[in-house]
Image (cartoon, rainbow, N blue to C red; front, side, top):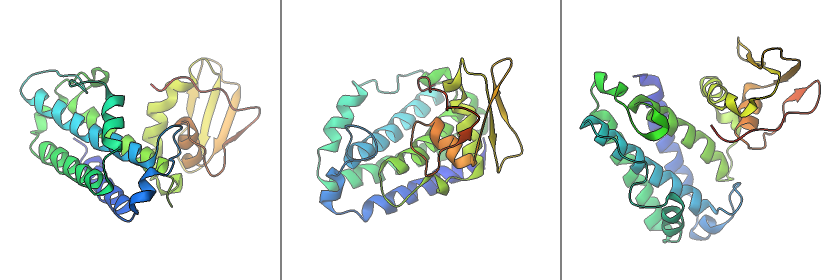
Length: 225
C-alpha cells in the first residue's frame, strides 16, 4: 500500500475537521458549491462515505463482499444526517474518521489487494477513493479553500481517474507543472493547457479559478467514471 496516500488521507481528515469545527451552526445550512446541497449535506456525505469504506474494508478482511450502502439509499442517509444539529454532525464526522483509520491501520500488507464490491476494485482502491472524496468535497464546502491546495500528485491521480469523462474526444491534456501529457482518442487534434490544478478541477466538474485553455472550445464532459 502507498503509505504516502494513507498519510495524505489522515492529514485530510484533520484539515476537514479543522474547517468545519470553525463554522457557526447557521453556516452548516448555507449552500455549498453542489446544487441542492448545503454544507451539512457535504459533511454528512463525507461521514457516511468513511463508514462505508470502513465496512467494506472489514468485510474484505473476512473474505466477504458487501455493498457500499447496504442499509439503504445513500441519498436518504445524507438527507437524514444533514438535518441533525451542528455538534452532532461534527461528532459524527470525527467518529467516522477514527473508525476508518483504525480499520485501515489493522490491514495486513497482503490484504490491501483483497477485492471489494465498490467499482469492482480492491481495498487499496478505497484509499484512493477517500483521497478524492476529501480533496474534491473540501472545495465544495465553499470556504477559503481552492484547487490550488491540491498537490501535483493528487492532480495527476485525479486526471488519471477522470480521463474517461473525455471519451469520444480527440484531445491532449498538457498540464504545465507535470512532466507528462494525457492523450484521448486515436488522433488527438485539440490541445488543452493550463495548470494541473485547473485541469483536474475542470475534469471534476468544478469551476477552477482559471479555466484551462485550448485551440477551441473545451469538450463536454461525460459522466463520472
